[in-house]
Each structure stands twice: as C-alpha cells, then as structure tokens.
Image (cartoon, rainbow, N blue to C red; front, side):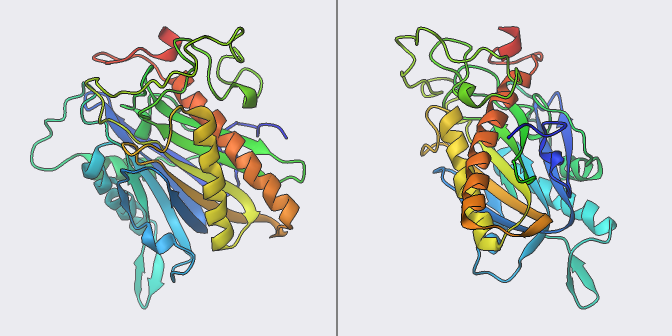
Length: 332
C-alpha cells in the first residue's frame, strides 16, 4: 500500500472537492461532489451530531445514490450550506429524477465553531447557503487543506484544527481516500508533545515525520479535552471515506464504520457525548466487480489507516490567523 499521487480523497476517480471560507467569520464549507450518482452510507458515533438527509443513506431506504456531500462549520446554521450546494447542482442539471423534475441529493453534517473568535454577527440570515454554493461550484481535483473550507475555524484540545485529506492505493489497485474536518473535543497529539497519535500510519513525512515520542511521556495517556475552556462546546469531527471499489449500500455502511477506527487511532478521546463524530462513505464503482471477503477486509483496514492520516494532516496543515484562540501546529 502507498499514498495516491496527490494524497487526497480526489485520487479516488469520480470524486471532486471544493472549499469556501470566510476569514472574518472564521468558518466555511466543503463540498464533496460526485461526478456521477454514487452509492453512499453514513455512520454516526458521536453523541451530538448535526445532520441533513442522513436517514435516506440507511441501506434499507429507497434512494441508493447521491450527488454530493457537504461538511460545514456553523453548527445548525451551517446546514444551510447543503441548500447552496443543491442549488449549484440544480444549475448543473443534476439530481434524482421524478417525472420532469430533478432533485439533487445532498446529505450534510456540521461542526460547532461559533465561539472561535470569528465575527458571527451576520444579520438576519447566515452566510452558509452562499458558502455551500461557492464550494460546490469550485469543486476540482486539487483543493486546499488545513485552514480551509469546513476546517477554517476548527479547533482541538491542544492545537488549531483543520481540513485534512489522505489516500491509499491497495496492492489490488483499489484506491481509498479520506477527507475530514477536525474539530475534536480531544487531542490529535500526545500529551504536551507535537507528536501525533496517528504516527504509526504516517506515509513519508506527510505530517512532520516525527514518529512516536521516545521515551513515551509520562502524561501521554492523560485525557486532554476542551472541557473547562472557553471552547468546551466547540466539537465534532466530520469526515468522508471514499473508494473506487464497487460496493453495495450495506458494504458502504460497513466501510464508514471501519473508518471511525481512524478517529480512535488519531484522536484521544474520540466519539464522546460532546462530539458529533460522523463518517460518510462513498463508493464510485470505477474499478472491478464486487469484492471478495478478504479484499473487503483489506479495504476496511486501509480506510481506518487513511482516515487516521487525514486527521493528523488536518492539524499539521492548519495555518495561523488573526484572532486565533489556539496555536497552529506548524507555528508552535
């Protein structure tokens, strides 16, 4: 296994990503655009999720494919971003066909970044619909990570959060890619060090090449969270795992479940009652037929490792900005 050519989720054929950010707002939105209608599923393991159209992603429900996914800041206000992306897709002629109508299917998830030092005095209506529209319209193979899109105003217990991505090409040629907006209650780094919990999975020096600390610090296992800080309610890590394998909707759900292991490998703690941790899964079916059991297990393992790397890259790639409440990893 090795990272894909760009080490981004867009290494998966059929996937594009666009970002829109507002520096004064300290927030933004990210759109994962499917070039064709794509099998999708979701798994929510955090205790405080904020979502749109996730019920239809359950394997027993009728709609099998979607047109896009949206990750957004803004808490519940950020759900408006999906409406903006939906408007852009409608302009593109995309959507679920019902008679003469087309309804773009755009599930979404949000994170809480309302108390991060940005100007949230936006007036009567929030700006997230426009941010979602801009993100969908800008979707491309290459996109910014770190302080960008849904990760613009993200934080963790120890460092500024951000938007991270990574990819893996398996020995059988299948590609898996991850995209994540890291806004965790916990920490992606070990104790007071700059070493990432995800270090065992690092490809090259994609997030600093520091490896695990040696000796392991005495406080390394201490639980570090935002509790008691001004930002104690600003949580939730939201993500997308994508593959070009041909999966059923049920298998896509299992892939999302497996990708959550990447959260557990990269964030301590994760899946808390104050996080809305969620993973969407996409299967573009650009390679081969349905997988044998062994190949599917390999894919699920790669999904967890790739997600862990993406989490660390989101923290590593974040950049400092005026009014930040936490240091950036690269500036510390």
